[in-house]
Image (cartoon, rainbow over all chains, first blue to last red; front, side):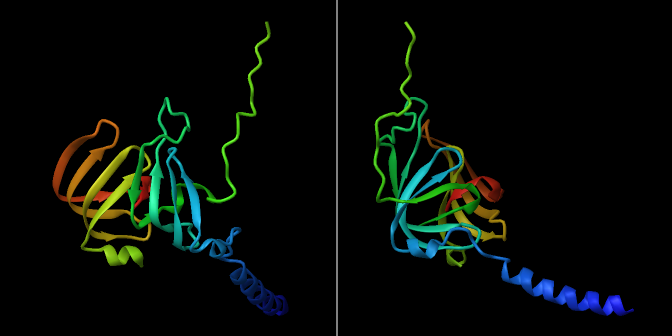
Length: 117
Length: 67
């Protein structure tokens, strides 16, 4: 009887603690609002746009979106196969990477293959 | 809520694969499965239209990338 009462009180404390930790994202997207970001998707698509909104499930709203597609022979050359979409909603379930458009540059391939003669 | 505003409008859905669906949005659910009407299906690379499906379709949200 006594332990049941004690268990009830302890349980209530744990519940409050759990509720605090429920929906914290490891990435604070509010600092990216109104900034141009680059997003990569499962399936190899890439998109750039201005982040207008997001939710805890990582669905994103981008404005002025430019979409890039990969080709077998393109191999991530970011072809001219780009499309302008206006306002889009990107599904969080297929997002694999989010990064700011600035501070990003193409570098020569660091993985040089050396052939033994 | 942004998708809520689109109910009744023509929308363009891009899948994870090279496929797109254009139709009128009738509704959706928490998992973003979508019900569309007057649907046209496009394959991106061959640049050809597939079937124009009238009636209604239920599009599985698992493969939707953009709306």
